[in-house]
Image (cartoon, rainbow over the protein chains, first blue to last red):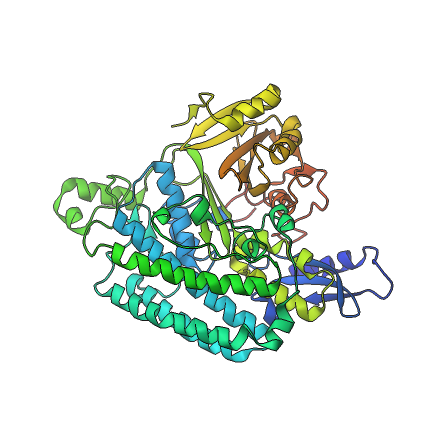
Length: 410
Length: 158
């Protein structure tokens, strides 16, 4: 432990030893224990007075080797790991991984499951954006928004708990469909929450959108141009706030997103305020998608594809037929072996393009799983946002990149 | 299963017209196209794909190495390209021998490759020549070994 700690401190010394850009340059460590870094992000700042000359994000404090663990698990077991990558949007991660494996094997998912997936991932997006809004506002000193947005987020978490049994680590999407039949009356609960949300969003807007302090803290801060954003591989609300209308749901529709009518909100300013406006508009668009999805989800019908030997048979079938029993036993002991090959599946997670790259060698365990996580790539643009700003604005810049450290470090 | 490309993909055709030596092989699988590029051509291919007005692969989504240990060539580096304008994706693959796992960095073409290549160096020990700042990113600076290599154990002593 001592050795580790000394290595981390040495790193700061190495950076500080580089030739300073000007006289009186001060090196400041922000994090890894800092309330506005949303976890364990460390940023080494070189300062001239209050102005940032250089910002160097240091990551890896939450590295848990998820990609290595995946190689020792069967394809179905990996799903529980995906929850833990982006713990604010577990269902989006479930979806990205399941779609990749379904593409690898060539499984057609029943429409009921597809619509339920769309509905639940949009709720995830709302919940994730609400967490972002609350924590970002509290970073900038607007305390009350935090209390309201977490109240609404909790209502969404209750839906997840009702449907899957878990608030956060849901693992509700499985290869070929859903883990369980959605419980009776779940759509009524969704409707109740969705009907109350637009009023709450208006309330947040009343508190922030025209608030002079809020505008002063965010407008013109951390500007990212469209060309820079594309060069840095930035995706999601960050990219759209810079004026690029790229959304994976629109460009490469998956899980029946092409049947839904929604807008891709964009702004052109590329500053923190634009990113705030884009995310609020996205919550409203997600509400629209959920409203369209509710009547589409049929109350009856299959919620999992039927692929013997790959997807576990229904409980009834497992108890009554010998084939069902054999398949059940084989799937849960040795797993299933997809054909050899490699696929890349991208989805639009709340933070941007979540890519899952899976390499199969024809054995029951994935040969390699790579998660192209939007937080990791978006965080790389932080120096571009922060240089030339004041220290207090670095907080706003980190806030609007909306990183989840679990996803950055994996 | 994997199949050889039948020559209809316009991107591959365009690439072959430009320089046939830069395309070692083409694989189609599940609607995804993989172009295998000899490593000495990688940077030129990247520049061409990103700059060519009819293709515009200006966005590098992802860079993922794979370790094929004990096979040789041991490492594969996969570049997932995206053309927002043409709504197209393409995978470039470079194969590297285990003894000499060096490939030219693509940071001059796609600056986003900076952290991706640092991660590949950190976890696989692949060297990227011309990279501006090639040091470990996820593991501690004094870490020994490259954790995502296949000869690195998942648990127990290294």
